[in-house]
Image 1 (cartoon, rainbow, N blue to C red):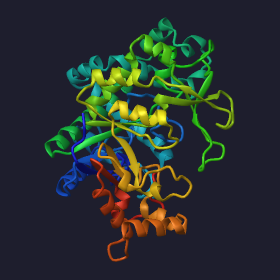
Image 2 (cartoon, helix red, strand yellow; image 1 turned 135 degrees about the horizontal axis):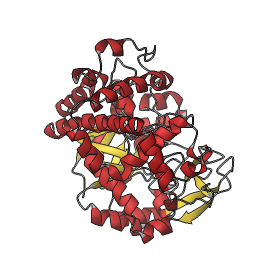
Image 3 (cartoon, helix red, strand yellow; image 1 turned 90 degrees about the horizontal axis):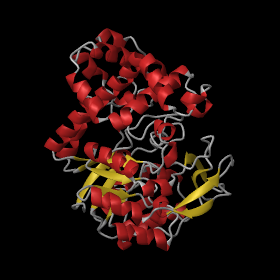
Image 4 (spheres, helix red, strand yellow; image 1 turned 90 degrees about the vertical axis):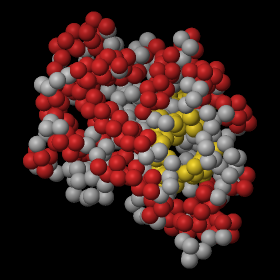
Length: 459
């Protein structure tokens, strides 16, 4: 399904205004949707809503399905009488209103959510029971996984001292689920609250004719319920240790490449099951987003495979991925769903052919067209309609920060090409260029509209 010509703004939910340390699904989210509607914008692009693991990145999550509890709005819980206002106001969520203090969130917010869940579990539970049934294919594994992580001092599941639980032995996990039933129910209820609040946002966005462009990483984290409960879908040895892991090779930005260390998929096993795990993952995403950006799309064509234990990504190798075999299944299962391929980075004719065969819109980044380190990025007059044009993504500097740090000649090239001038404003010139491109969809970060530079970069 193609994207009609339109535009939108990239803003993570976590970046919304909040009195409680992090942006949430509360009043500010609804107000932002109102703003998008009034500004004539069709899309709100967000980052993954998944739980954040070590490093506080949604791209390294404890689950490919579970939502990030930090995004649950506390004021709504107060309205539902699951929390008292005084209980929330007693917590210091951080001293800098413009920065997220993840340490304080970890220390304080979970206890509030646990308290709210305990109170919720004592109320009528028909909706909660329905939620558990509808999400049983991932929720039960995730809940007991998180409970066991707590029992083992948040160690990675590979380091758990109980070998039966470490290996996700069915009977041992069943006994643990019964033993820790209250804790499991609390984890499940917190997820119920998360998706209950998100559904309200989705409904309001649809009413305002604003669509949500979601985001999923290609890979999942090694320390996740997905790998722990489904080791057969990943390249692990008999001791459930990765054989090789993910990354990207050295390039003009990183001399050692990037070592991501995610376990690689066992594409042979996934193919044998007609990619059922991936179908479940996309099916879930299609219920909470209007469209989905697939991060590191090129890894579907070929992926950089690095021996486990390497300190850098230098000694990796390219291995063929599933290609159209996977994409054909997804297109057949979800013919009306919109996919966006994040096809940035190392390009080959094979990757370009896969993008063309998929029919998915790819991505173009305006600022990268003027980066002397990579002459392979197209200039805007070379863009095609079936694409998404960005001033910059969350992985790039906001355009005013780019102006402050880029090579002088790169800036001059952009000024000459776009006719940038002080009267219009450097950032507004880039936005004008993006809106005027032939790409069907144009997206700019909120920082670009606000003209922010220092301390405004997301990643």
